[in-house]
Amino acid sequence: MPAQSTIEQDNEFIAHQLTRYLEDKSYREIASVTGHHAETVRRYLRDASRISASFIRKSSSAYNIDANLLLHGRPAQVEEKDLRFVGTSSLLAELGRRITRVEDCMIGRSLANEVQAELEIHVCRDEPD
Image (spheres, helix red, strand yellow):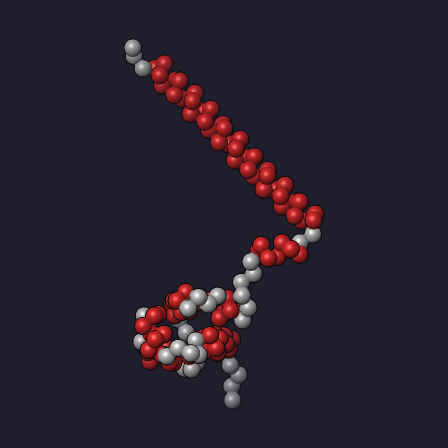
């Protein structure tokens, strides 16, 4: 028996994950929610057909499933959760970077306002009385 390609292995994994999260749903129900035909849904969930990105996106959205669970077997990492485990020095460095960015934006906005005010003054001076 020839070895499975990576694509076939990935498809099999995604089909398994979909079946796991949608096990209490009928093919027809999933089809009506995702806009795919029931037979196509059956083939997807039985790993008889390559699963489309559209189907993954629509089913994960419709059934509130993290697409990362379907594709990787684990939820997406949320940055805020990770902050609990970041060292103080890293947190302070990131805070400093963000403060600098905010300051740069404020300085840029202030300069833009000054230039705009100068242009308005020049426009007013150039207008005939």
